[in-house]
Length: 515
Ligand code: NAP
Image: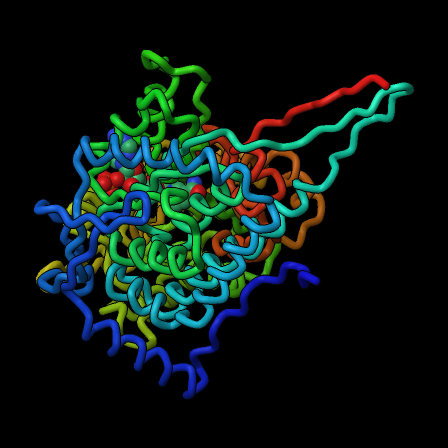
């Protein structure tokens, strides 16, 4: 019998034996840097002349891998192959589909440190962040496998005299999966295997910054025995092949996670009907955030500041859930600023590969320039309390930065920076703090540190965020525990890792037989 879902435990790197394993994994991966990887369409490896070269953000002269790059002709082939594979994959019993996911989870578990090591070198995640990414990928496989088994059971309908009535969930068809680079294994795995276990076939276009770890996922799914054509691996530039894939008449849905602008573009393109298209395309789009934590006057300020620092600077602030606005109520403002300045100065910035680094690099040169640009804007919009400097001579390093005395409508308090930059805003009252928190176009995560029960109840009702956390960090949602997805311009509220997720990629058929 299948054991109930439980989250994959995280690795305790304070233990010597675990550090040793991770160091060995890093060495193994380092010996494989710079290799070439193919596309995979219908189970066949295809090497193209054009390559996407992925670099180590901690050391940008180091090529992590050279991955074949699809053009439109290959994109066409991938969609057609997925459409053909759908005819047989949809007939595979749900329990059998789930077993491919359980097998893949077992392989990932065996290769855990190696997968994390790839992310340390390709995405610049520190050890703990990379380990959490791998654990989340395993969770998605285990959780969605079980979800499919649940949804394949007879679904409740109201009994009706003289008839047998049933309702069953069927897959949609071909999907295009477009994940971001910031959870290059977890989000890529979840957004792909959810639709696949539901009976769909897909074209997976990984983010161009992290195609090597994406290839490792593909390798694992192949080793798990997934039939050819169910997942077609199609690295390529989003700008070049994205529109073609999204607009294709054989495509039934798009599962996107990434920036607001690209998500909105995909959403509008998918709404157009291509010649020959026979259905309305569905779009699941999970996008950016401008997430706020409120520190109330009446709370443990040390605990609150520690939670804010983890939320703001984990993975260099490059999480959609990252705290980028801190709203402090009343008299707590001064002591919070003092504690923040002191603690942020203690964070260690450096190459992700070194054990004990708190803040690694940002992903690439474009991000580095964009974030440094916002730091410049911040110098005009607020008072620099910590950080503010960067160094891109070897890797893309930006020191954790805090701006105090920021106005709620300032650009650094409204626009997603996606880097280690925190804007601190003062509010006179808790009500004002909630109003400031809600006053952006995003609504992804939020947090409140308070001991005031009435304030927490108010936040429950009025703080408009898809994932709200009290007296803890606002990052690190766990599969099954905190289903994840935002409001407003943060997306279509897919609730990844939740019980509503697979139905986004299915259609329900009601069958009624009169006796
Ligand atoms: P991005 O620039 O929007 O890219 C995301 C994906 O879209 C990449 O695979 C990209 O391909 C592709 N793409 C780009 N242009 C496209 C087009 N015209 N058509 C189709 N696909 C296209 O985002 P990112 O920089 O990778 O990720 C960071 C963003 O993701 C942040 O805004 C963050 O908040 C958001 N995010 C949201 C969530 C959530 O659950 N809400 C989770 C994680 C991240 P290329 O790489 O080839 O350009």
